Length: 177
Image 1 (cartoon, rainbow, N blue to C red):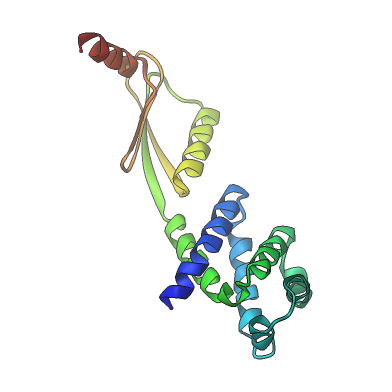
Image 2 (spheres, one colour):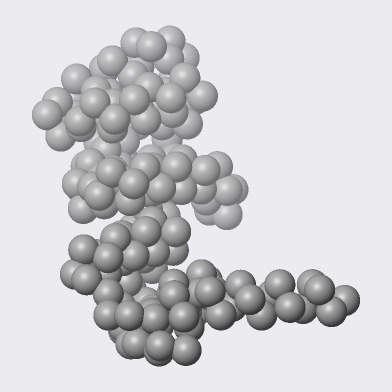
C-alpha cells in the first residue's frame, strides 16, 4: 500500500493544486471518486493490468467515464495511462480526499492595518492568502495607526510585514549593522 501511495502522491497533489487554483475542489473530488470506482471495476481491472496501448486504454477509460470527467480530468487520465498508472487511481482519489479535508480547515489570519480596510481590500487579501496557504482563510482585521501605512498579516507561522513602520525598523537594523 505504501508503494501505491508513493506512486499516487504526485498525481493527487497536482490534481489538488489545480483544483484549488480553479476553485473546483468538489467537482475534482467527484471526478476522481468516480474514476477510482471505474478503475476498481472487475471488468476494467484486467484491462488496466494488460498490455493495451496507453492511448487506447485512455480512450476506453474516458469513454467509460463519459460525462463524469471534464477536459482536465480527461487529461489526467491520459497522463496516467501514458505512464501506466491508472491502477493507482483509487489511491489518488484517497490522497485527494485527504488533501481536501486538510484544505477545508479554516485558518484565521490577523490583519493589522494603519487605516480601516475596505471590503474589496479585505477580499483581495483573503483570496491571496487562500491561494498562498491553500486553505480557507477567516480574516480578523484591526487598525493600528502606529504602522503609519500598510499592513501586517499573521496566519499561523506566516508573518507578512508590509507596514511602513516595519520597513523603517528593518532599514534601521541594516544601517546599524
